[in-house]
Length: 527
Image 1: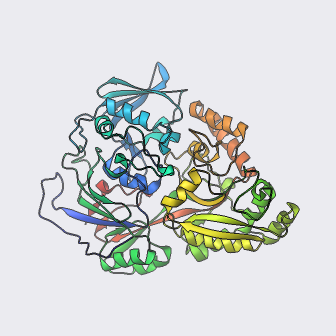
Image 2: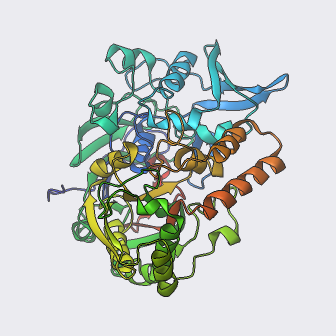
Image 3: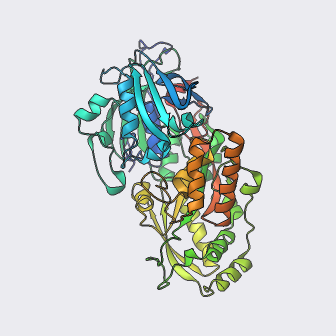
């Protein structure tokens, strides 16, 4: 919870940092906090955002979304073995604790990230082995030639092996089952900022790493970051308008005009690589939170089709999102390889047809069901759910809304204890395989870890797995199209819209919107 305090934006005395004439604090706010500091425990946007300030991956997506060198300076598949990617590592890099960064840390971290409790393991399903060649060279061997391996490494953070082991954090935190660990509340990365203090859901303070390897390559004008989660939209805006915070990552859409008209503030807008949708548990024989005894209405495709055309996405865009969204018919943003205009076409809103489908499925009198929704993760998430409640009510589905903070909401999906839920999905790889692996493959240890629908199709699973090693890009894209055709026909999810990003900030800040909603503050400059 946000506790009002005097948050000062101080311009301090000059410090000896290359390229920075003055030290400056950035007071940053958003609705929800990082779920954990363990960089492998949760594959979640705000969690990655904080981690990117402290830890670093081998490869990094810059503020334009382009892949650039981070802890690896070069990478290529071996000419004599396309199953092996060789990474040359950056030299003379130290962790915040003073430990040298070497190949041992990369091997250790990527193996740790594949453990059962690591939510990021779905990014590494194609890896056969990670091997040290020398202190600054690592080979990653995949189960078949994988031309897109590098796309999967931009959120795979490298930890110091000695520090992690010495503090009993060999295994990633089991976040979904409520585990706590040393790595969940402490950090030791190579990134531009070091952890000073952390009170989850209250405040996290970071300071500029004086030994950062990127001096002279990045502005590094922010020398202290004060991160304050403020769940209340009104309080978040008030803090920005009063000058208590400098940068709000997720200002509510209803306040954008007001913020843009305020002297000293500005709104920077861009399309986001994220889609919002609803999932339905269609695999169970009987649901626990519905009013139907002995069967599962979601297992009938006609019910899912009825729900899909009962949701008025244009009304959500106009009324709830104030035109700050892009309605869609597929759980794939336009940034992603595999996207087409045909897939993106929004289902025609038709209440009468929806009622007819409900009746033909034997649910003419409707039924009740619980909808689980986050209230601090996506733009107007609870308001979107409230709108859907009313729309589904028109076809006889009485929805009981249960909205919770994301820290309580996400474990419901990961543990398959929700039967109807909202989820948003960004695609850091910019490729459909990421969506398929996490959301559409049969739920298991390595894949389908966010598939809370119970959807399971062995043919689709086989096609998804084949993408890991298909080097013929034309064939690969044909397989991607075939998978989309099948899952769209099966109505696995109910897509709502692609989010639009609105970053609000003081007008002396020069900072472009990053399409993954990842503000890498080492790039920020002050005018």
